Figure 1 (cartoon, one colour):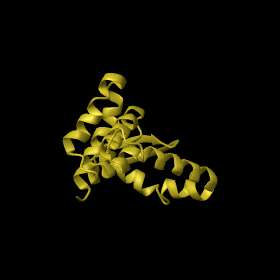
Figure 2: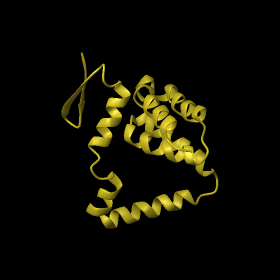
Figure 3: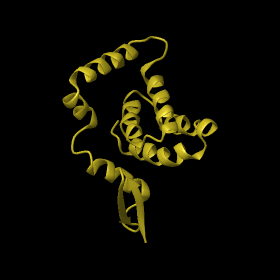
Figure 4: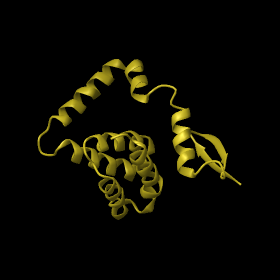
Length: 136
Protein backbone atom coordinates (compact mmCIF):
# COMPACT_ATOMS: atom_id res chain seq x y z
CA UNK A 1 0.00 0.00 0.00
CA UNK A 2 1.24 3.49 -0.84
CA UNK A 3 0.25 7.03 -0.05
CA UNK A 4 -0.72 8.67 -3.33
CA UNK A 5 -1.28 12.38 -3.75
CA UNK A 6 -1.70 14.78 -6.62
CA UNK A 7 0.56 17.72 -5.86
CA UNK A 8 1.28 20.49 -8.34
CA UNK A 9 -0.40 18.44 -11.09
CA UNK A 10 1.96 15.52 -10.47
CA UNK A 11 1.26 12.14 -8.96
CA UNK A 12 3.42 11.32 -5.96
CA UNK A 13 3.48 8.14 -3.94
CA UNK A 14 5.41 6.60 -1.07
CA UNK A 15 5.07 3.29 0.77
CA UNK A 16 2.84 3.71 3.83
CA UNK A 17 5.25 1.71 5.96
CA UNK A 18 8.11 4.12 5.30
CA UNK A 19 6.34 7.49 5.71
CA UNK A 20 3.34 8.89 7.48
CA UNK A 21 1.17 11.21 5.41
CA UNK A 22 2.53 14.16 7.40
CA UNK A 23 6.14 13.12 6.77
CA UNK A 24 5.35 12.55 3.10
CA UNK A 25 3.91 16.06 2.71
CA UNK A 26 6.83 17.64 4.55
CA UNK A 27 9.41 15.71 2.55
CA UNK A 28 7.63 16.68 -0.69
CA UNK A 29 7.67 20.35 0.32
CA UNK A 30 11.34 20.23 1.20
CA UNK A 31 12.40 18.17 -1.85
CA UNK A 32 10.69 20.56 -4.21
CA UNK A 33 11.95 23.68 -2.49
CA UNK A 34 15.21 23.87 -4.37
CA UNK A 35 14.98 27.60 -3.72
CA UNK A 36 13.14 29.37 -0.96
CA UNK A 37 9.92 30.66 -2.57
CA UNK A 38 10.50 34.17 -1.21
CA UNK A 39 14.01 34.21 -2.65
CA UNK A 40 12.56 33.22 -6.02
CA UNK A 41 9.96 35.98 -5.69
CA UNK A 42 12.73 38.50 -4.93
CA UNK A 43 14.78 37.31 -7.89
CA UNK A 44 11.96 37.24 -10.41
CA UNK A 45 10.08 40.39 -9.38
CA UNK A 46 12.35 42.60 -7.27
CA UNK A 47 10.14 45.71 -7.47
CA UNK A 48 7.02 43.84 -6.42
CA UNK A 49 8.94 41.93 -3.77
CA UNK A 50 10.28 45.18 -2.33
CA UNK A 51 6.78 46.68 -2.16
CA UNK A 52 5.49 43.49 -0.53
CA UNK A 53 8.31 43.59 2.04
CA UNK A 54 7.46 47.22 2.84
CA UNK A 55 3.84 46.19 3.44
CA UNK A 56 4.95 43.37 5.74
CA UNK A 57 7.20 45.75 7.69
CA UNK A 58 4.35 48.27 8.04
CA UNK A 59 2.07 45.51 9.36
CA UNK A 60 4.76 44.34 11.79
CA UNK A 61 5.02 47.89 13.13
CA UNK A 62 1.33 48.28 13.97
CA UNK A 63 0.80 48.37 17.72
CA UNK A 64 -2.67 46.92 18.29
CA UNK A 65 -1.45 43.30 18.48
CA UNK A 66 1.81 41.82 19.66
CA UNK A 67 3.99 39.87 17.20
CA UNK A 68 3.03 36.44 18.58
CA UNK A 69 -0.69 37.18 18.25
CA UNK A 70 -0.17 38.38 14.68
CA UNK A 71 1.58 35.08 13.84
CA UNK A 72 -1.22 33.05 15.44
CA UNK A 73 -3.83 34.93 13.41
CA UNK A 74 -1.80 34.38 10.26
CA UNK A 75 -1.55 30.65 11.03
CA UNK A 76 -5.32 30.49 11.47
CA UNK A 77 -5.93 32.24 8.17
CA UNK A 78 -3.47 29.99 6.35
CA UNK A 79 -5.07 26.90 7.93
CA UNK A 80 -8.46 27.97 6.55
CA UNK A 81 -6.80 28.23 3.14
CA UNK A 82 -5.08 24.84 3.59
CA UNK A 83 -1.70 26.48 2.95
CA UNK A 84 0.57 23.82 4.42
CA UNK A 85 3.73 25.54 3.19
CA UNK A 86 2.89 28.76 5.08
CA UNK A 87 2.00 26.73 8.17
CA UNK A 88 5.40 25.05 7.95
CA UNK A 89 7.25 28.37 8.09
CA UNK A 90 5.00 30.42 10.35
CA UNK A 91 4.66 27.88 13.15
CA UNK A 92 8.42 28.04 13.67
CA UNK A 93 8.21 31.86 13.71
CA UNK A 94 5.36 31.78 16.24
CA UNK A 95 7.31 29.39 18.46
CA UNK A 96 10.30 31.76 18.37
CA UNK A 97 7.95 34.51 19.54
CA UNK A 98 6.82 32.41 22.50
CA UNK A 99 3.74 30.60 21.18
CA UNK A 100 3.00 27.36 22.99
CA UNK A 101 2.08 24.08 21.35
CA UNK A 102 -1.45 24.46 22.74
CA UNK A 103 -1.77 27.96 21.25
CA UNK A 104 -0.72 26.63 17.83
CA UNK A 105 -3.13 23.71 18.17
CA UNK A 106 -6.05 25.87 19.28
CA UNK A 107 -5.39 28.45 16.57
CA UNK A 108 -5.87 25.74 13.95
CA UNK A 109 -8.76 24.04 15.75
CA UNK A 110 -10.74 27.30 15.91
CA UNK A 111 -10.87 27.23 12.11
CA UNK A 112 -13.33 24.32 12.35
CA UNK A 113 -16.11 26.86 12.87
CA UNK A 114 -15.44 28.64 9.58
CA UNK A 115 -13.92 25.99 7.36
CA UNK A 116 -14.86 22.57 8.67
CA UNK A 117 -12.32 19.79 8.88
CA UNK A 118 -10.28 20.47 5.74
CA UNK A 119 -7.86 23.04 7.18
CA UNK A 120 -7.44 21.09 10.40
CA UNK A 121 -6.82 17.83 8.55
CA UNK A 122 -4.26 19.41 6.23
CA UNK A 123 -2.49 21.74 8.63
CA UNK A 124 -2.68 20.48 12.21
CA UNK A 125 -0.35 17.49 11.71
CA UNK A 126 2.20 19.67 9.92
CA UNK A 127 1.95 22.45 12.51
CA UNK A 128 2.45 20.15 15.49
CA UNK A 129 5.29 18.31 13.78
CA UNK A 130 7.05 21.59 12.98
CA UNK A 131 6.49 22.84 16.52
CA UNK A 132 7.88 19.64 18.03
CA UNK A 133 10.90 19.65 15.72
CA UNK A 134 11.71 23.38 15.90
CA UNK A 135 14.42 24.49 18.27
CA UNK A 136 13.62 26.74 21.19
